[in-house]
Image (cartoon, rainbow, N blue to C red; front, side):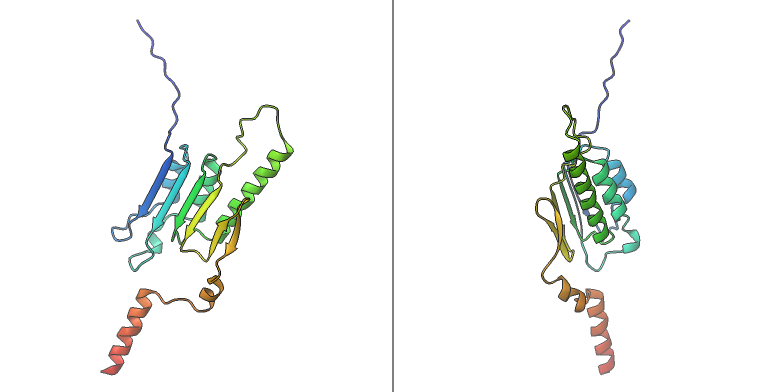
Length: 173
């Protein structure tokens, strides 16, 4: 009679890049991201188109999900988001606070033997479609040069431009 030894295995997903599909309405959710966060991710990217087909009511990824990912996945080195409209500035401010607190705690409690469970590996946040960037070492938020102008004179969406053009054509008749 033989006995089988079972080893504890953990998920070793290191790099995950997701392209949200707004045409077929496939969006990432906070719940899905919670499952993903249990792996040993080092690179996570989520890109979603910001065009006409985007439906905010179906977009389930919020700042809460991104915060959980960063908090639970301490080995995450790079976070990349493009047009994740429900992930606002507040989420990035909270992430930067978590990173700063972990750095301070580590500096104060330099143990002789450390497994660095309290530290975050996150060193780069790449953003597209936001009026700010995360840059530097330590990481910090900076408004993009044209973000103030964009807030004062927002570029009309395709839908708004189309509606305006249809309105003009209807008035000509």
